[in-house]
Image (cartoon, rainbow, N blue to C red; front, side, top):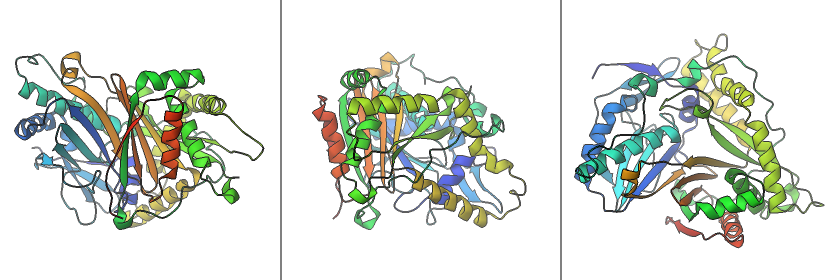
Amino acid sequence: MRETWYKVDNVAKVFIATSTRRDPRVFRISCTLNEEVDPAALAAALERAVRQFQNFQVTLHRGLFWHYLESTDKMPHPEEETRAPCAEVYGADIKNELLYRVLYRGQRIHLEMFHGLSDGNGGILFLKTIVCYYLKARHPEELADAVPEYDASAADLAQDSFRKFYGRRKAPEAYKGGAYRLHGAKLPYDQTQYFEAHMPVAQLLAKAKECGATITSYLAALLMLAIYAEMPPLERNRPIVVSIPVNLRNYYPSATARNFFNTIKIGHRFTAEEEISLPALAATLDADLKAALTPENIKAQMDSYEKLEHMPGIKPVPLFIKNKAVGFFTWLETFKETVTLSNMGRIPLAPALANYVDGFSSVSSTNTMFICVCSYQEELVLGISSAFRNTNVLKNFIRGLSGNGLDVTIYATEVES
């Protein structure tokens, strides 16, 4: 392999500086097949996929002024799942290793990736390519004509789109005020508990439409009400703020498989005199979300992610100082949000491949609570991760869904008490 290197993008710098044992900044995307996974076929499929995603065949290194990614000849090998989801991929004790892993168990194929390498959309693209080649290997006659569903060159996939589309626009005014923060005893041994809530897409969409809201706004409203029910009286003057990642590929002509997203925040301050209903709250949040999602706002906020790179005098500052500064300002941002809700949307698959796939799901490591949303065909899955012992917020949230007529099935990982 030709030896190459490139700088990490500015979002990746945040994940590198803030990675911890409890939250190693790893996300998982899973594909459930309607057959048991064949490890040999999966290994062959992975080998084919990495030839097309050379930008993922890198290791992370520290430079004097910035981290950088360097191409490597290391090849990934699928492993049977034995650890908890989203285990550490990059850290002080992990050197010169790939920044992702592919796991399997039963009928599931998992892709786990350090967020400094890519975002959920890049991960989905990679996993779908692996699944395509896997199914072709398993069903060569039926899927002889199947090909991965993307049209991008190696240069497009490796593009730093933050740098390419930076335009020096002024960022929109952020949500003001310190947000209510989830707190309580954390699970021991730096554990995180993971849940999956499965429900029909049509049911959830119908409920959201009844409120005049999108699925994202409807779920955000339910989540806020679930959190508010557990807020101590002395803290109920604080707003509940939901942080929502936004896929910037919807606003720019980019096919990058690297990080290319930003986040917006929508919040609501409940009052003792107010008894706001779910429909009213969902409609209010939907209006706030649409106002924040104008192309002008999104593009201006995108520039704020790249601004650090262009600040005068920043380049010669040593890396350890930059890491501390990035970590500090990221820590300050945590006081402006309560919870993260990431809607990855519908995951499409070619009809020929879809005959062999039952579903997709996603979860992310977290230091507090994080909810990933994705749908495939008729089913929507909420991938919920929580670092807390207390599960009352989650119970309130799921009861809010089922209490509004949704058929919800929930699964959970085991944790040590």
